Image: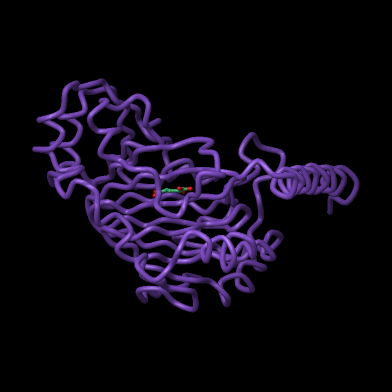
Length: 286
Ligand SMILES: O=C(O)CCC(=O)C(=O)O
């Protein structure tokens, strides 16, 4: 059975304009409570040409980048479905990649998870530190994402706090609360235990019946250029990109005992669940 995705701008979640949210308020209302929030007008002071093909042509360097291509547009999915092939990885110059990605032939092409430090220096200077990331916070990793039409990131969760900043174009995200962990069938026993075994884009309810409980409480969001989405660790998310778009994401932490303890607790929980999964597979096969 196929569940039809719904696509409101931001369904059932906090939405705020950056001008109405101080860094202290963000910490208090969202970070401390680990609550997602959609922040509009969050990059008003950034270069407005950032991410266009012309912009990349005018940079100081033109590095090689890895472009992934998959005609199905789904990347990194954990599946035994032979119809979903593994993406091809192509190395090309950044300007070539941007020209391709913004063209019709760019459908299903995605520069994913490209470390910001690999990008030209003047590009990095145009990508500012997120406004709500206080001086007490540490950036663990920052990445550049550039997709053609019809690209999809399957359902997964992150271990760190995440700001996903949409620079150009639209993306649709769906979030699920961490309490739906079991309903989303994490790929335990694989090297990607943070990925769901459910193909969110065409969920198979016969195989994954608990998914319907999570689906009933999903949060659908349309991310537009200028938006930042705060995704706390453990919140599951899937991304559907209907048109060419560019994002930057930051994983960060505050280095306090609370965050570290929380991270250790989450890892320990995952290990225990994994052991439980192995136990069930070994002794309760029927
Ligand atoms: O935008 C995407 O396609 C994926 C982003 C993502 O999953 C993340 O920032 O954790």
